[in-house]
Structures are given as C-alpha cells and as structure tokens.
Image (cartoon, rainbow, N blue to C red):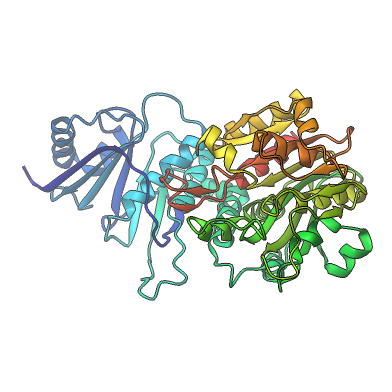
Length: 506
C-alpha cells in the first residue's frame, strides 16, 4: 500500500485547548491543503472520490475497511496518504441521520480538532450536500471548539492558517456565517475570556471597561453604569452589602440594544457577576477556590448574548444587566446575622455571606422590573453547587413559575445545544427562606440549595413578571471536554439566550 501510515481513532474526538485557525469558505480545495471529509457511512462520498482520483480513493477505501470505520457520528479517522496530492486526509463520521444545526457545530469542532494535527496552512473540509446555513454553523463550531486561553503562557506559539469549508456557493455560506454565526462564536469566546481572567486582573470596574470596548461602535446600543452612590440613592442594600468587604467597589452594568419595534417591551437578561468569591466571612475552603474567579459567568454570558444579538442586527429589544461585586472578608465585610434592606424594601437576614449571588441579583432583578417592565426576565447565575450534584455537567438547572416559559427556554436550549432541565419551585421553598427577624433569609442549610436559591430570587420578582432562573453552576467550567466546549471556561448560556431572543420574534 502507498500509505505512509494510518492512524484510526474510534473515539469521539473532543478538542483540547489550542490557538485558533480562522474560519473560511471556498469553492474547491487546493492540492497543498489537508483534507477532511464528512462521511455518513464507510464509503467515500462521490464528490470526494472525484476530487481524489481512483487510485487514492481505492487506497483510502481499503484503509477505512481495514479499520472498521463505519461513519458513525463523532468517530474520526486520520489518514496520511502518499497516493494523493493532499498528503493528509481525514474522515469525520456524521452518521446516516439528518443533522441538526447544533450537530453541525459539533462537526465543525471535530474538524478543527483534526486540523490541530495538520501542518498544512489550510485544512479544507468537505461536507457534500450541506447547506450554506449548515456550513456556517460548522464554521462557528470550529471557532468555539478551538478555544484556549493562552494569554499568560510565555511559550504560547501563534497559530496561522485557516480551516476552510468547501461549498458550491461559498459566498452564500460566508454571508450566512457573517450574518450570525461569526458573532455568536465571538460572543461565546469573549465570555470564556472573561471567565478565564484571574481576579487580580478582572474586577467590577474592569468588567465594565471591557464591556464598553466590546460594544464600541455597535449601533443601537446604549450603556449605563450604576456606581456606589447610585446604589445608595436607589436603596440597593443587598449588592452593597456583598461588595463592602472589598477595596474594589461594586457596579451594575446595563447594556441596552434596541433592534426591535419601538415601544416593544424588552427581554431582560440579568447576570450574577461576582468577580471573585472567597465566601466572605463564611469563607470557602481552599480546595477549588481558584475557580471562583469564574463566579461572574452569568454576567459575562448575558453581556455577550446581547453583543451577539446587536452585532448581527437581530430584530429584538434586549437588555443585559450585570450585577458586579467582589466578595471578600476584610474588616468591613458583612457578617452572618446582619440584616440588609434590598431595593424592593424587603429585609434580608444574612445567614451565610457565601450565598452572595442571590443578593446581588435581588437588587438587579428589582431594578430591571422598575426601570424596564420586561416582556421576559431571565436571570443567569453560577448560584449553587447543589445544581451540579443534581444534574451533572450536561444540563443547567431551570426554574420557572409558568410552564409556557419553561417550555420556551427548554426549546431554545435544544436548538442551541445548551440544554436545560427543569427543577422544582414549591411553596415550601418560600417557607424555608422565611426569617425569624427579617422578611427573608439568604440561606437555609436544611433545604435544597438550588430550589431555595431560586425561591429567594423569586421573592424579588413581581407575580405578574414573566421570569425564569438559570443555575449554571454545573456547566460553566468543563472538566471533561466536549466538541464545542473544550476544557475550562464554557461560556454556557450565550447560544441559549441568543436563540431565546430570536425565537421571541419569530
């Protein structure tokens, strides 16, 4: 045989962290390219056979047969051939079933994973029969699947070249990518960058600065920021209490995008933005505390989702509210047993200073209702460890009072690839957060943490406000990689909220 070597992997390929190749679209590969081929079964597609020629195709067919490669979805084969001008040929199984757009994203991410093995300047990806929209989704998946945070690595090497998706109408695929998928991928990567930054670099005021840079020059967007003076004037004792132990003061960032009809009530996404969570006086153990730099994921996700919608000119009115604070245990920090008064007038007994996310959201969601009268209010937070213990890292926890709202979010999760599982809100959970000396308490060690956390936030949501709470604490950081979510920060929620907003105007 004329193969120099054959390496077959019969495992689901999930990419590790590495630097980025740019996504592109082309009409046909060049001989200097490496080539990746989508295969629904063990036979090469006709388009690939025509491109490779009879001799190389026969060699590839024999190697694939010998390795028992069936084209099963997610299975990959890496073939190094001397019989073809391309030199490197990769096969990616997509299975016989129709692929959803989220599956095409995974396909693109797997192609990007194989591209990591290639020394070619360009890796061309053939998926005969794929539409322009499907290839655009694959390109977005390739960008998300390649992600790594190498900013502080002294030996990080730049990666050049591209991963190019082959299409008979490359210009249409490029337009589809540029219309939405590019911005969706970029927004997700921005959220991951924010999650990954160390807390000595990223704090409330720096978060605001980076958000302003993210939206610089984007039409239809306005940004406002509440500082400590504003919070005191508005009576936001809950978020002020969380931030009073830090030398870095809290902020509430509000990003408003008006892309829909004038006068239409906006969707409001409120995000927990604890730029570092030591636990405060109720200090956490050291093991795993480093990950608390990512306790601002909710704020990053809601901000990034509005970026995706605004830059793609989605026809929606949407607002992101990022409730930003650093939870530290200095001599001025609030204590367990303290009582604070939230913007709503509700008094809160502090049972644990480590239940701080719900406190910053209490003021944020109340302000959202008073100021914007949302058509739908969704808060996003890395709120509780218990949600991860209940659902693992495949689903985020969803809480909603109304079945119809829960169904909307679950549907958006199914389309976007960011899945949700509904968890209970029961009247007993409201009783479990009643305080003996104040209106409510922020924690009850005898009750389910995820449900009582949701019930606490719900205390600050008016009965007639459509509302959902997303607890993403189990899915915000990947310990095991997935195709579009490599190890580390996941940016979970950007694609979900983007889809939810688009669904609201269809």
